[in-house]
Image (tube, rainbow, N blue to C red; front, side, top):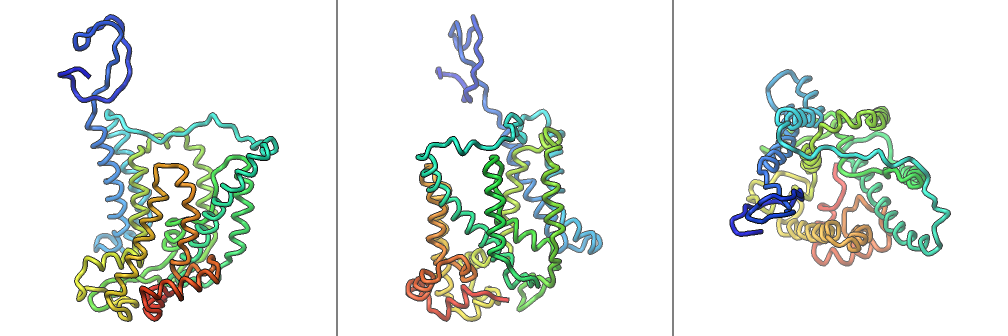
Length: 370
């Protein structure tokens, strides 16, 4: 870049016999940075989060009737996505934004696995084992959170049947290069909450929500997946009208709403609160403040380890992520006992963790509460 030129982003455009900055011949023009693009991206992303969260909490306001407030809260995310997509694609159509992208150049054919050399099959065994660990843990952790006693479900869990169905379905999907499916966070707990009747209760000046009843039905799951399949008919339009910034806001909204009722997040907030203002939770009444903070910092340390491996810029480090989660599970919640080797869990819970937190306090912090 010559002296006196403006900051720019490289965008090759070759022009012959032109004079740019006193240089003749074939030159490379550059497209100057456009601040309106980044500002619109932030506007759409933050606007999607703000509108969705505001509508999600609309049932706590005195406006409209109770039934209408509940409908707005249930459809907070679709309303926010449609509104911000209209804002980005039509109101600000003169500003270039990244749109939803897809490719229809990949035919649906079976992968020729029989043509793979034996060395590739052996390598696939190692990577497949790590992937199976991730599926195994994601599915069971999601199922354990869905079947939490706080949700007051009447029908019992079926961990083994769920894993069997996940294995069969994903084996077929893998042969045709289709996306894998299994229970995942935060979608599964949010699905349960969307089917639940929730009540607000006040205890010692603190407002909290409890689930009164959950409508246990398979109809919502069937209909939602039918609609997902029918969404292919929405390509390229109107799906192309959804800016990427709106999709990013959608994921942020899901992350924020999943923090509601998350005990670890609640205990992290206690680090910045006065002890007199602590909510009257089960573990707060039974555990000293110091023990609560020690247990919380142990979990934060585990979270930092998982973030390092999960968001690492090196691909080979990311491949170790499922193994790291599996190794950390014995240190985690008691509700995950269904997927942890009993002997390893027994040693860690009764030998390692009690060195930092007493057993009676660990049961209060790490147990299942109604």
